[in-house]
Every structure is written in structure tokens, then in C-alpha cells.
Image (cartoon, rainbow, N blue to C red):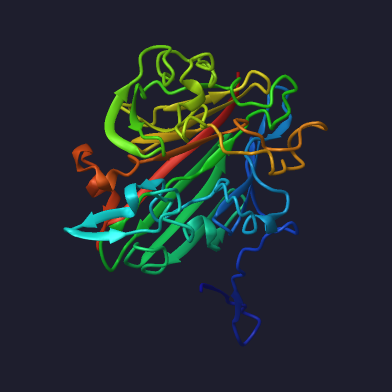
Length: 381
């Protein structure tokens, strides 16, 4: 704890003022803001609850999913990982096993025959500590004990700093495992609807455009969204093409017979739930551009990660309420395919695919620091 000592010459003694811990607003949320953005957070999952940006008319629009009642985040049994950090190893671990130095470790099977986001005690279920906060930035920290998520051994210390400047929202994460080697791969699991569900012509996300100019390649996945090891290349205008031109709608392949089952689930998962590689992108290049003509909002991603997961919200079943900042009088629910999660990260299940050459990036040990950095810049068409 830091102390500020003020010397007063007219007094015989000095006075110590103890710095106060940051505190949330009356609604329980921590708010940071800039000229173009207001972002709100809670310690549960280090979660972003609201993100207000300007639409084409200069109005504030809340473009991420969430709940009005912050007490519902830990109560929602569906736990969609709204805008939080599901560590210590995100996405899937095939068959719930991995190896370090020829020793096999077993993890919790919480997604069929696989592990998803390290299991049901991952960091998106934990309450993080607020360690610093200013008007335009906030830092959360977590200490993850060994085996607190089944099969994830070794203590891990991690922190995330969110900051805003002008129309940019920045996220920076660091994590260390001081005791032993352990899987470490993080992401921010951000769910967007740039129309705030207010478009009267469609409840779906398919009218948003998505452009990923450096992502012609993708990881081929099985029916459970687990990579098979094969790397595919999307032909122009094919179902997984978002690289050939900037005006492709998320739903551009709706008329393709394969679209209805493109993300597996026994043919029940329409759209997308897969990993796209980022190849040969220049430093600080925009690697993902999401946009909507209805609101006029654009969202551009820059990241130091090797790819992104795109998930078009197939498993949303219409039971979750929208926030009061979103929707219309007749549209009050999060329905199937009405949003898109974009998650910058390293190769999914890379610890089980040494042929990709990413094992060393996903296994970290004493003396090594894992880092992750991304930013979203918002504008108008």
C-alpha cells in the first residue's frame, strides 16, 4: 500500500493519507470513458458489461451483450462467457488431455468429449481484484491456484488492463506461472451486435459485414468444433471466405446448403464457430473489420495474436433478456444467430498439435511471461 506524506511547516508533525481502493458506482459497475467511448466493468470474470460508442447520428449505442442485473452473471446457468476472460487456457482441449514433458494431464470434460475454457471453474467464473482505476483505465488481477481448474497445475498470476482513448478500447493481459510449466492461452470473449438489437428488419447478425483480409486460412474442425489438424483455405465467396473483399455479409453464404451445419453440432449449428488464421499481417494492421449499415458503426480489431475465433451465436435460445439499453418493444430476447463473438487468440488446441509449431507459445513456465494485446477502434461508415 502506498502512502502520501505531506509536510506542513506550521505543524510539528506530518500527516499520512492512505490511498483509497477504487470503488464502483451505485450500480456496482466501474466506468471508464473517453471522448468517443464509455465502458463499464464488474470484477466477476473481469467482465465488460456495457460498451457505448457513437452511431452515424452521434447517438450512444451499447454494442455488447450482457445483463442489467450484475447479480445475474454468476447465476446464469448457461454462462455464455459474456465479454469476460475464460483462462487459464481458452477454447477447447481435445479429449480433455494434454502433455508436458511426456507427462499426460487430464482436464474436466465440460463440452462433450472435450474441455472448453479450462472447465467450469475457469476465470470467467471467478471474482477478480481491482488493483487500479482512473477515469480512462482499470486493471483487474487474479491469482489462480494450482489445480483449481482440474488438470491445470502450477500457480498462475494474471492481470488485465482495459483502457479507452478517443474511439479506441484497448485490452492488455499478462500472466506468469512462477512454479512450473502450465498451459496459458487467453482471450477476451467479446459479443457484439452493432445495432444494439434495434434493427426492425432483422433480429439476426447476418446483415453485419465482416472483413478479415489476412485470414484466407482456417482450422478445419470436427462436429464438436474441435480442430482436426487440417488447415483449410477459403476460396473467394465460399462459405468461410471473409478475406476476398470488404463487403461480404456475415450471412453471405446463407443459401449454401452447408451453411445450416457449418459449425457442427450434428448439423444444428448454423453459421460460424471456428478459428481463422491471421497470416502475414503488418504490425498494427486492422485484421478484423465488423460493420453495420443500420447503425453506421464500424469496429476494427488490431491484435498481436495469431488468429481469431468467430462465433455467430447459434446456441442462443431466446431465453436471455436483452439489456434495457438494447432492443425494441417487440424484441427483448437474445435469439439464435443474433450476435457475433470475436475472440483473438492463438491456435485452438495448439498444445495437442505440435505440427503447427505453437506448443511453446501455449505452455509457459518459470521465468516466462505470457502476454496478449488487442484494441478495438470504433467509427462510422
